[in-house]
Image 1 (cartoon, rainbow, N blue to C red):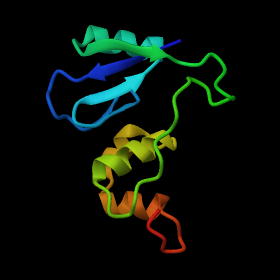
Image 2 (image 1 turned 90 degrees about the horizontal axis):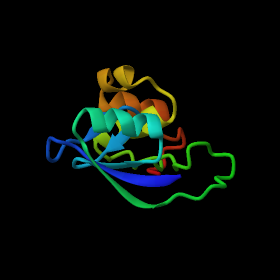
Image 3 (image 1 turned 120 degrees about the vertical axis):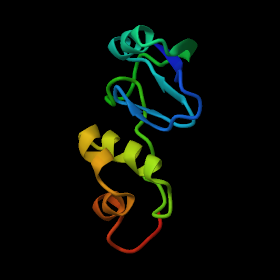
Length: 111
């Protein structure tokens, strides 16, 4: 599978589109169905590298985003929450603090 860089038609957009986290208008995916969506909606799609065929059982060849620091932006927490399985609409409706409360470690650490 080939990994593709996605660039949003709106410069600087940060959020999740079709399950792909975009930061400052840029994200990556190797999912062919998602790539078709981006092509149809006039996103810039560029092949960047070959994704490994053996993905260690992770599915899709993509690594989920690391849990952000508690002080991270809502966009970072939104991308993390969606990667954890929260529906995008639910994550967008939640405040940053609600996402932190749901996904941050209970021990008070900032990681």
